[in-house]
Image 1 (cartoon, rainbow, N blue to C red):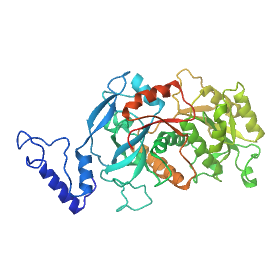
Image 2 (cartoon, rainbow, N blue to C red):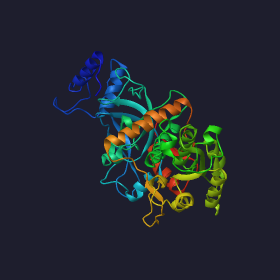
Image 3 (cartoon, helix red, strand yellow):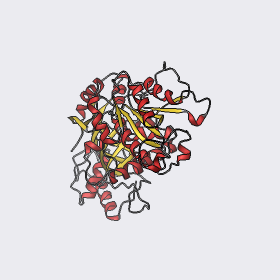
Image 4 (cartoon, rainbow, N blue to C red):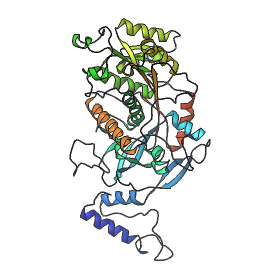
Length: 443
């Protein structure tokens, strides 16, 4: 825990002593009775009052009791944050397809009961040891101040064997601070913030997995060794250097929209190899995807979409050797990349790569020269925390502050309160497009 100032420490000791005195609390059978789960005391300071609330309270959770069963609302003891952890008061949660598969099929869950969910926004209530709070920590942040800092966060329950304290479908949960993003003071609502964590994590992990240098870290020589005609877009200087189009398939999905925004920043990096962002989306969503930064948007419903993409790239004087599959058919992505690099002839630096958010089908055929990588955060804790700290605490925090990215797509509120999550997942699994379903947990 963080150190308490002297006055607050004294008052907490006073409150603690009251909890054993019959005359100061509700009547208990004996003087030696255990501490109650909650206590109603008018604290001498608001700080002590809020601290004791987080220390002793219980909270409501949407609990997964068994595979294939709907969540049940139950009361749980509010946990204490450990080292490097935040205790967060959940304000909004965003729903992901994986949430529905986990509820219905028990995907990833080793034991029941548990609490699941990935995306949240909320208020930091309490912090554990080693969490940067600003007053005694150097550097540019991020910082987390109890009772003040608003955050969006990506749940760590997958790496905690689905310990229920780390799932987000509840009023209070634990999150490693590296998984959290301090939000700007203005301009982003709880609902918008809840849409961010997974939407950002997946495409940024795709660029890393495919070996694409981060913005500001690229050199053309390291990111492209392909000899093709000059690009047809950008400045005259860039026409001599930028020779690739970066393809996002399924760009109107949640992770797809942020894939487009992050790809646009890669395109704008003067030292990257990317001259254009290509994307696929349904006809009704193409204008929106273009507004996020796609230079060309193709309708994936068109039977000749693969040929259209290949022809456009050749018309622009570009090659395509990197594709982020946000959602959709892997075979279509393979066909596009094969047109440029299917005959790599053993030259590793010319292998085309697909970063796939969907699980790779077991029966998919391998294509010579095209590597497909299933996107999943590292299982090594140190590596994972470093990646999350960069993606959430640096990349997303700075780009939101600068206005170079925005929450996307727009949230759609499907209910209020934890009891609305089951129905919201049912809607999600029926299929949605260019929106992120959100449940408001608290105001």
